[in-house]
Amino acid sequence: MTALEAKHPGENEYLQAVREVLESIEEVYNQHPEFEKAKIVERIVEPDRIFTFRVTWVDRNGEVQTNLGYRVQYNAALGAYKGGLRFHKAVNVSMLKFLGFEQIFKNSLTMLPLGGGKGGSDFDPVGKTDEEIMRFCQAFMYELWRNIGPDQDSPAGDVGVGGREIGYLYGAYKKLAREHSTGALTGKSYGWGGSLIRPEATGFGAIYYVERMVKQTGDKMEGKRIALSGFGNVAWGAAIKATELGAKVVALSGPDGVCELPNGIDKEMIDYMLEMRASNRNKVEDMATKFPGKAVFTPGKKAWMVKCDIACPCAFQNELAEADAKELIANGVKYVAEVSNMGCQPAAIAAFQAAKIPFGPGKAVNAGGVATSGLEICQNAEHRNWTAEEVDKNLHTIMNNIYDMCVQYGKQADGTINYVKGANIAGFMRVANAMLAQGII
Ligand code: GLU
Image (cartoon, rainbow, N blue to C red; front, side):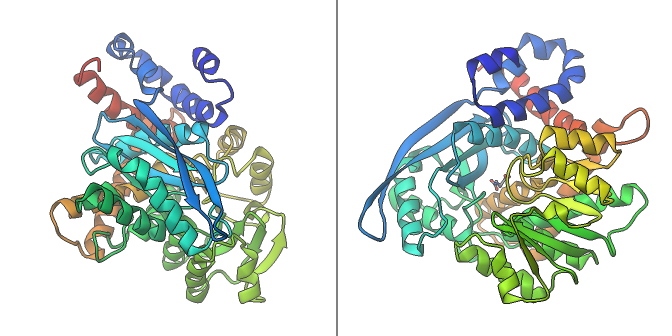
């Protein structure tokens, strides 16, 4: 870590993600001198390569805009690079390196043949028109198309990139590459290569994992109050599945504040989440304006002020701080599951673990999204569409398997489960063994 900090000063998110993994695997790693000999750790922390490129496009006023685009191809030991694209004004190399690093182990946990990668741009979708988004996606693809493909690197969505953006990106890719390689991008719409359940998959998978965490303690989902942060694709899928299992979604949030939902969320409100995302306004207050009384808006506050049994960050890295963890604990939270990547700050995780509150880490809890991307690639390769039931059944099996591996590797002497350790060790071992078998490359 000292060497890495000196080599990459100021890359805080990246260093935070690496530290968490290295601390978890240290003991197991030291039992494998062959890993040490092949310098697996020194190699795995550095991406295979990073592409950085200029993206120039014309806005609605005819003005020329310039953004930066990136693709981090991190590790291909298990398969072609796989991971989302993030469009957000704060995107930089450190953020994409942390996301790419997490992706290696997450993809490994799915047991599918997926390497790890991530990309994106500092393009800010907030307030943009549909045409501006299309032009930006096309300009982004002018640069990236040569470096992606089903057997090379397959990007998908992440924050700021959903079905609409994937459509524009794929259209540009197909025109430039002059071939219909549907597996070159996932998260496509159904009808031209997309998979049923992919939009819901991250949220569904997360709730399948949470359900196991709850059952592990002899408890049940029914009647549990769940606070979700964000209101995007991930929170949407989680809200559907949690409600279906009889839990009550009591909070959603946005950069502008929190909406408390005293009676839980209903179908109409869940559907409205999609409109809120499509509007590019990025305001959760719109929910309270649309459903007065059913949603009560408080500006400037986070979802964690709402009393709940289960807290699920679904928005951005480091969105849950130590003070939030203390507030949740004081309000009686029973389970915490990160659905966003690295949603909790290290001190917040330490606070939950010290209070003996089961804590599920993002790379395990949210792996259902990329797992279903893997299933989308399978469907593309066999020129077939699976039914929703078939995809959901596969997703559920994968999440159960991930949960079981976390228990296997994370069981502590006192009988409690350290899910962070379990996920990191299980994810790491598969990649490390593959790297070892493939030689020094
Ligand atoms: N962005 C998602 C993640 O963090 C999905 C990636 C994918 O489907 O390739 O895992």
